[in-house]
Amino acid sequence: MTVVGPFGLSVRDQALEADVQAGLAAVEAGLLDATKSDVPFITEAAQHLVLAGGKRFRPLLVMLAAQFGDPYAPGVVPAAVVVELTHLATLYHDDVMDEAAVRRGVPSANSRWGNSLAVLTGDFLFARASHTLADLGPEAVRIQAEAFERLVTGQILETAGPVDGRDPVDHYLDVLGGKTGSLVAVSCRFGAMMSGADESVVDILTQYGERLGVAFQLADDVLDIASEGHESGKTPGTDLREGVPTLPVLRLRAAAAAHGRPEDLELVALVDGDLTDDARHAEALRLLRAHPALEQARRDTVRYAEEARAMLTPLPDGYAKSALQELCDAVVHRAG
Image (cartoon, rainbow, N blue to C red):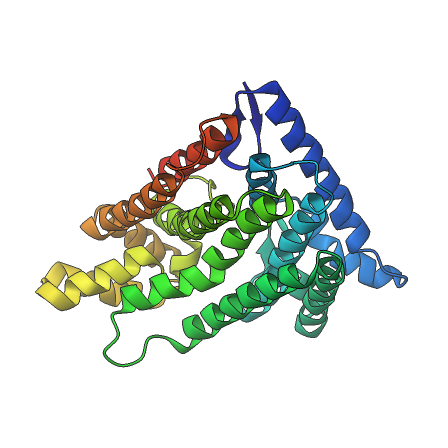
């Protein structure tokens, strides 16, 4: 049993392990090649986050999904490069929008080179992803375009907030389906599709990826509050301090609005106040960790992970299916 990929995913078959490791190594080489430019500065900026590392969650899903067809098919690795380039490009843009100072343990591109160059570098990565995508055929281009539209729509909806009368939790889950679920779903879809898997398998894995992507983000929401360490890759309470409305906070607000308990209303006021003060931030974290809203957010995470796992039921048993199931378990484990 060897540990590969995010969350310490264990692969229990030597052949599958070799395929996954070889595929991820080829993706890494493809990412470096795709981010090279004749202009040295562009290369440096474009490779900034590639070299910083990362979970490579989406390429891993491409490799596992490809096991349901021919994992050595020529389109598999380029498809994985496309989804990771797209993901990386969104990180450059997200950091500008969030005014983030650090990403993956290194200074963010915007803090190092300024917002304008960070945005343009993200655009450069989108362009390189499109160049690679063009070689995969018009159907792949259409699928990626639809996913990218959903991703951008999710970002816009998050920025705009829910319309009057819309449940903020439902709105947030829709946002996550677009921002995170869409590209994770495409990762599974591309892996299966490029490997020549049956259309029914492609559809099953796409639906699995959509649900897993949302569960993955919800687990990060829970970790932002519950973690004492840095399991999510960020300092605990980062989203809370920055006023990002994650699911535990939305569940808290819903409880306060529904029941009007003084302690809930006081905690909402604390959370919505200035949390740049370390003492106030620590108190908000302490109270949220003890609040039922956090446990409700955990249950939401488990529900999406279990839905993802259930989608896999019709697939033939084997090591690839087991690995995909284990990813669902890993997401739940992260959320506690």
